Image (tube, rainbow, N blue to C red; front, side, top):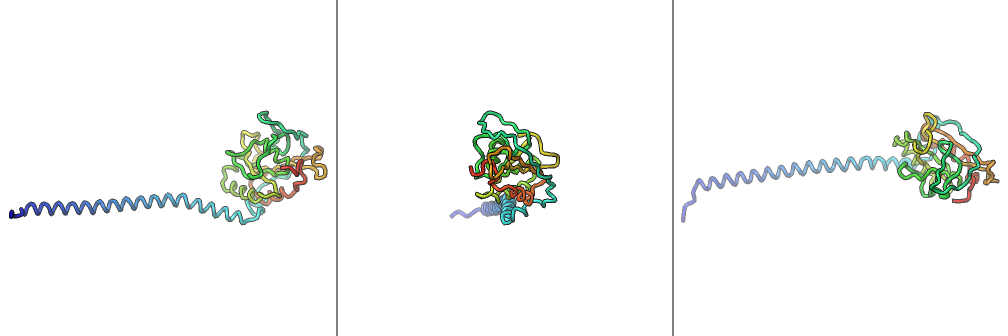
Length: 246
């Protein structure tokens, strides 16, 4: 039997030692890469989860708050007096695509589309809002519409508060919609005002009497549940041009 060459044995031992050393390095590298990946994934999950949990907590907090306590106080809202004026007597349906223009920004009465915005929705953004003329039809049926301008739309806290207020009014007894008023819709609100409340009111005994119908506005600098709830409470649904229809 041939004797094993000591040099070959030594060489094999070194090779095996190098192989084991390389295997250990590869294992450490794999663990390091895995650790980095875990940290990255955890960071991405946290980045997505933390804002979500924060928003959910805010929604739950607002959901448990009365309308009057949502948003800024009446004093901080910087609202003007309620403006009231006689309507133009144009309580007519004008089908699309005939254009309808309004003298007021935003309108609280006037000609409008035959269809109205759905009662199922009480908050809209610029991406999904119906045509202004459809919302005017809602005004005819006793809705209060809170129109917010581009400035308020960029303030996420105020937008969340306005949505929370709108959610409070999602029932069969109160007709309320919050919707954007954009630069494409008409002239801007008065300087410093970013929210406009509108209501088309009528005499409860003679709702169809246009001589007794009025348009009502209140412009505010910020969203205030206290101001909005007071404005909504001023006119029961019976004081609408068409109170029983919707």
